[in-house]
Length: 176
Length: 310
Image (cartoon, rainbow over all chains, first blue to last red; front, top):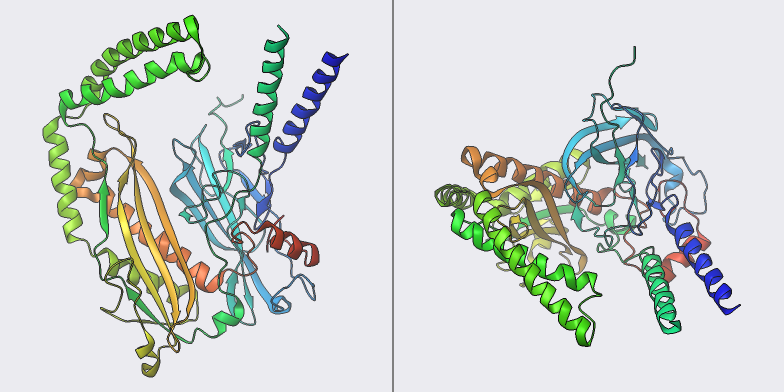
């Protein structure tokens, strides 16, 4: 009886752990829609989700114009205009950190972008986006999108270690 | 038997708690960017660079096969010795079990040391090549004007990405990272705010190994002061962490890879400083781990997409 209770408790505990970690990651900035930011089994670790091609179409949530939104704590978002997006992709290094900026786009008009040139197969990458807009004629940006969990949030490190992640598929032979 | 069972249960619970603790949000290292009211008061901005020399910090590889064998032996012996202790429960144990573990560790350490010395000797760069690379990098460092280059890059990026009035103030920065410079006299000269940028350390960092992959890094300090009363408006430190290469690869082609990475670092830091001081709006990623305040604000003011926590 006592043993059954302990085993049940353990199962519940492990389920709680898995439920807490193996889910979509919370983010700062614009939320990625493809590929999504997910935790892998190990806590504090964001998975490198495999994308469908070497030129994936990355998607993220759009930056909406929050007219009259009470959330605008500086009361200036009503004048938001000219929204565009900036995108950056880095190759990941040996410790999964961004080591080489390999792709950059500025002024994208829609919240998605097909990578212009083929990436390396079976390679890990980090990517991020931000919205660029104007408030009352002054240029402003959202912060670069990144996940909340990971390397102790070393926000003072550039590039950020918690940018979104994906992995390209291995080079497969062409199908006939 | 029951005691063993309880120990296993306790161990699993501890692991589960540690795993769950990994999901807890850790504090951030950056202060919130200046709000719009503070930004509106920036006026004409003077930009100064530090007057001190940044501290170079370069991790060098083993010079030649003998030094390589030494490093390899030390690293492999340590790894070999720790393996049985980890497998045996973190170096614990008592009585006969403990003695066996120590004996195993000593044996594994010796074997590891021998293997490491052979591998280390084989993988080490020739001493002359490492010395030559050291000379190339030393010469490169002497010719650098890191502080001024960093300041100029920031002014260039700031002018291109914002509408702020940025003015270079040559020869006015702090003489050491610890010294606070007074810029109040600039108020009469039409400068409302001073941005002070100083590179404190730079170099190549990596593990103490035979021929390790080394990461280029720059550590910097940024302060923003009002000239009318000397009030500090913003202060933070930023760390650039760049590409990875071996020591000799960084020095190749008259240190060309080193110079290129330095340029990337100037640009990345300049863009980050510009973003933080002038551009980022509605950021909640910089709340210094003040979860209670953040939670309250979130509850009262749920942010629109792209402006904060989601």
